Length: 259
Image (tube, rainbow, N blue to C red):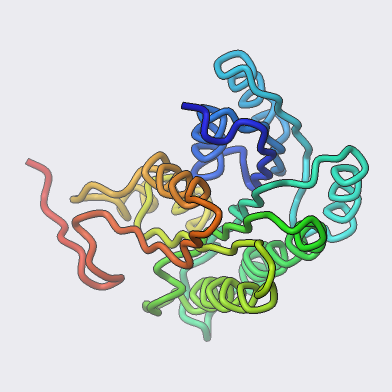
């Protein structure tokens, strides 16, 4: 069943992890895709896979959402081509560093705030007006349980994801009276490149994050995002929190020694 036939969906951070899994899930449902990420070689490989395997149209662009001028230019090219997205998936995001605030690294802080908050704003600001003008559209933000509950050494990452939660709520209010929907999908532990990026390429430390329990997969999150965007037009899933069964909040996690 091709539930998304005729739809154009923009996915940011589509070269890996949740973004890549969402692109695959959308393509399976017949959506045409606009894929943005910093790593163009990965995007092009994914695009070839989706064109060949699903027969969908895929447009790729090397876009760092932190670069406001580039986002503006690429958004304008979409508008001029008649490809205002039906869905924007603001997925691009990361954690960088894991230090108490008094030992934090300014570059880590800037990287998180500029990507997780300002990047989301850059993309949304450029494209949302066209959804509002058209009268339809759906903005889906990938949040986190880190935007619901703070944990030690999470500080700036937590703040950035609390900001995503606040922006989801605020955008919903700002588009009240239109048919534009705004949603957030907020996962807990997901096995992706997330921890490797947070720990600056330390694979052993990153793997330890997921030791002793079964975390979510990127596909699990993609299935939930797909559910959100395929609800009938009168249904807006405001916020979906998704946890692995072993996790009950950011502190309660049932880790068991491998047998």
